[in-house]
Image (cartoon, rainbow, N blue to C red; front, side):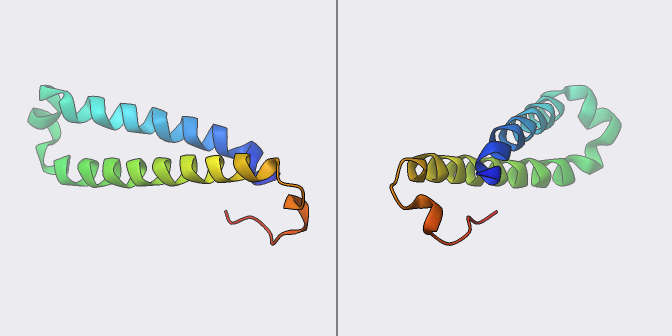
Length: 79
């Protein structure tokens, strides 16, 4: 249950970071000031996108299991 409760905040944090990174990559001033960091920022954006997708999928999985009769007797949820 704790994991399920923490996932929305984690998802929101990843969404904010994703938006910040996307804005940075879309800003022409970023290329002028820190063009060499483009690959680093792009790689982080890809990581954040994958982490967000995984967190959302995990949230959906836990939400679906919440209504199952024996959900509490199953193994501990993955984090």
